[in-house]
Image 1 (cartoon, one colour):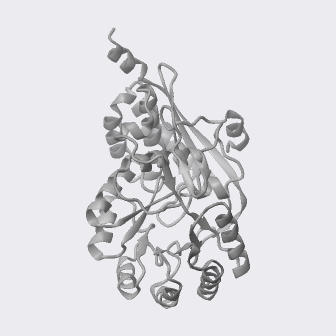
Image 2 (image 1 turned 90 degrees about the vertical axis):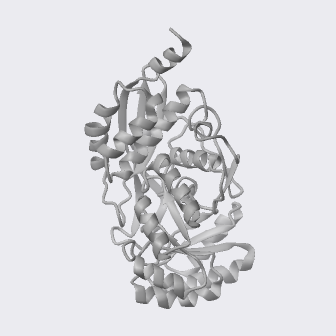
Image 3 (image 1 turned 135 degrees about the vertical axis):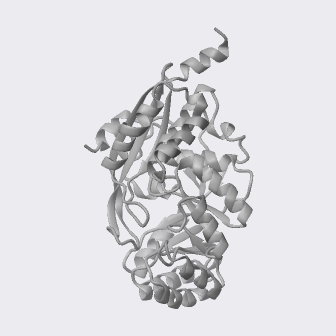
Length: 383
């Protein structure tokens, strides 16, 4: 048997496992969302795909209920068990392009679960070829990814400033603060942050689609004095007319998050002039396979790319880091590592992804370059 045939035989998928986890936060996190604004944990689903030769591919998604997603751990688990597993078992991971296309048809519109399965296929395929994922994506163009930090609502200016001071002390210079529940407090917090740090930080705001158009217009007009870099999703994701009107009314760029799920929605954002930046999240947008397509489309449309994430573990951080490492174009300073670095109480990796000085170092080694800590999986497993 030729080496190529042996590799293909060894890459045949033997098993697909979905691992539901509930990981507590170090402290509660508050944002402007209709479902459970204050949260104390994140529900994570890890997909583990094993090949005939014992190699393992890993992917992660989150049941982070928000505008545009009502996924729960049981719903994600069932889709892996009932749809993805029968499709994948017995097939070669080296045919990952074909498998991803079939999954997209079988799980049409189910981007959250596609994210974990697709990323696990990328990880497994790269491991079968003894390559890091960034080489599978075309080669590494950067070894470190600059990142900022998203900070929770705190209820007062002092708490917001204290959180930002801690972030700056750890090397972060891009701070995205949450707004959208109390416009007067939002303005006071932004003013306090700018007064405390001056131009030493790049200041951003994120409303998570929590305001109506009138309230957003009044607040954003006042925030112009703070020289914000970006304001993200001031109105609900469906209100592209409102986003476009706000984009024309204020001087700083608006960023779309909840408004963008797939290529069609991104095209509509561009067509209407609703945002000059958009944020991708691995789970929301379907994992590396779909996110990379969105980045290519955004580049064509002249829309800035902000790499983000829902709160996640180091596994998801490693996946996005590999994607960013292989991206040859321009990227804005995102904050895709916030959940792992500042929110979850414990990670689930044997060795953490290196995050220091406002930069994520791309893990090296085959695949995503990370391994799961089995003891942590047992500790946080949700049944």
